[in-house]
Length: 200
Image 1 (cartoon, one colour):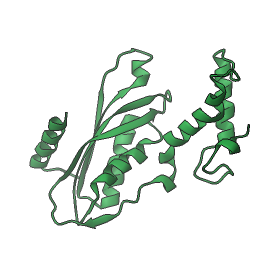
Image 2 (tube, one colour):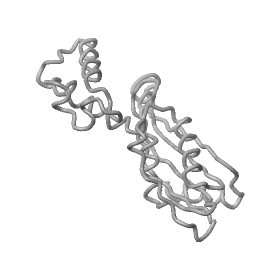
Image 3 (cartoon, one colour):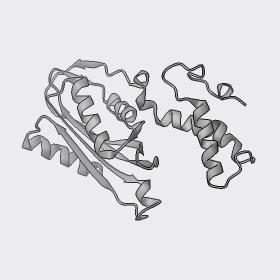
């Protein structure tokens, strides 16, 4: 069965989709490499459909077409906007294993604000690619600063990496990374920390 029969988005080679044929061939070869029979009942759909579809979803952040529209509104105040507990799911670029956790975001508007739901959508879009947590934290902070022309942005991500939990030290610890663009006042820093601690 061909990849086009399974592929529903960009199967004809349009930009914005993964190469399903390569994904199928690579997954089949990996199954063979570990001694599996790719054509046995439980694995046929794995390489033909499931893995390519999964990687297409999990790398949507590499496609500008998938970026959420960050429509802004005139800000009525320059008070700090804080959004906590945003789910993060990404793939470690070193082992192509997932890491997951939460992102907490604060920004001080300049003249515009963005809808709160867009913050979660933006984090999701940035996360859907091969990343390292430090880079993802920075990319979200820098991207949001540009999108909303904010005077200051802070992004903090706390996540558990399956490349640590399932291999290596085989311990499920948490890693926290933080990036700040601009400067938050001491009061804003306290408000951010209080909001994060309250959510936890």
